[in-house]
Image (cartoon, rainbow, N blue to C red; front, side, top):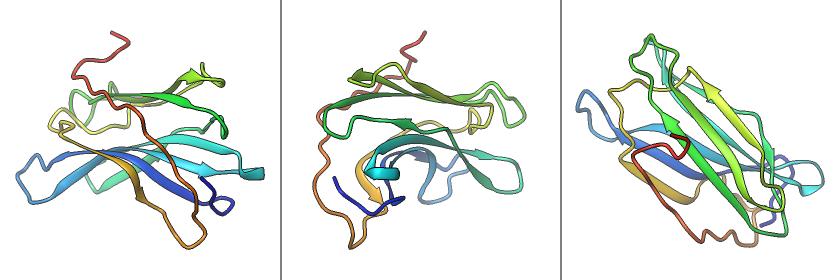
Length: 150
C-alpha cells in the first residue's frame, strides 16, 4: 500500500453499544497504519476512555512493521473495573513476521466495565484520500472473550 508520507489509515476498529441505551455505537479501540519517513509503515493502537467530562482518545507508541512481508498483530483489551480505576489496558503486539517481538501498551486509560466489544470493523475505516494506492490484505481474524496472555 502506498500513501503520502505521514498519512494514516484506521484499519481496525472495535466498538460497542452505548451503555445507557443511546442509538449508535461507542468506539472503544482502533489500530492505525501510518506511513513514516521513507514510506516505512508503522502501526499503533488507540484506546478511548471516559473522564466524566468527555470521551478522550489515547495513542500508544508506534511499532514498525515489514512493508514487504506479512505481519501478524495481536490486539488485547481489558476494560477497567469502573471509571475511576486504572486497571484496564489496551495492548498491541507484533507476534508474527520478520519484525515480531515488539509490543506497546496503553494502561489505565480504557473504558469501564459498562462497555463490551460487540462490533469489529476491519479494512480501511478512515483516512483514504487521493494519494492512496495499492492494496492491503487481511488474511485472518480471530476474536476471544478471554485474553491470550491469561
